[in-house]
Length: 72
Image (cartoon, rainbow, N blue to C red; front, side, top):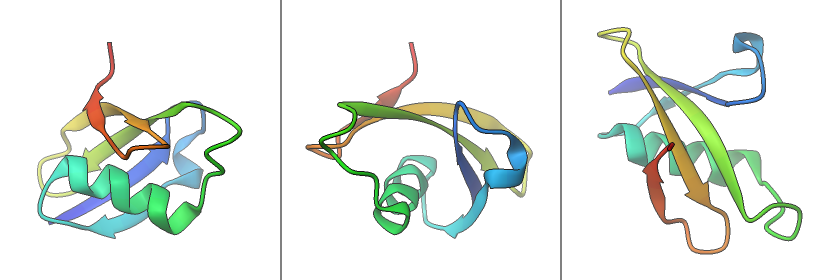
């Protein structure tokens, strides 16, 4: 499925298109492509938008483990 993903603190112009089967997988793929340094932060919050439905979800991804959970 096509998703656009961006870091929560960035505006939409910084989004990247990612094709993954789930929104969670899209969040992890974005970070793998973007190459965040795990030493800088423990986790990153990402906004994932389903391009087919327009639904947006926020995920917090642990940079050390890749564990993904909804933003609180």
